[in-house]
Image (tube, rainbow, N blue to C red; front, top):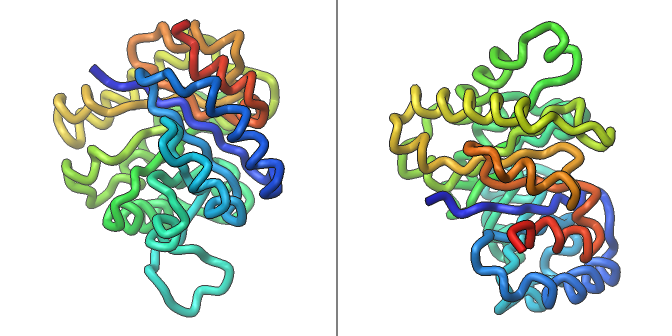
Length: 251
């Protein structure tokens, strides 16, 4: 049985006081939910400040990115061990906005994943096609390339600490959401690719999240699909009540 994951990507929002207010409001709304792995991913400057307020709650702390080196002359970067020091158990790697705006490639995503996994972090590994790629009927090709590139060289043991997040780029922040059938088809294909690389047991254990304008009113339909194991939530994770409603979708 795959434990669902609901992760909130706060992107470039929330100062420290705002983040503290959000987690303080969120905790009592989700404190009794033991059936879902809950994750929030604030900006780097907030991580250490909300580590203690989250202690003892079911909410895990994630960073939105990391570097592949442990230390060195890499101005502006943050290493996996520094994320752990700040209280993180998870890290998002390969988000489409990192690929689109900051030149991340499958090769750099792979290096970051290996570094994060070696440090003991759980990785939320993002993949997804653009609207142009979907219109050109390249979705499956793009997904397979990103999966194979991102996972290259990872062992089955390392794979167990990876959660794949499928985010069709055309659905991020646009208000558009893939239909339940579109999302299920993509997730089923992703699981099949993982199975081809690592075997059926690894594929069956792999948790695959959907991301792209996830809201309280569409989460139940998405979660009813057999290959959708949770959500990577953007805008709706910035308010405690809407994120809690998504986390508590089973209620």
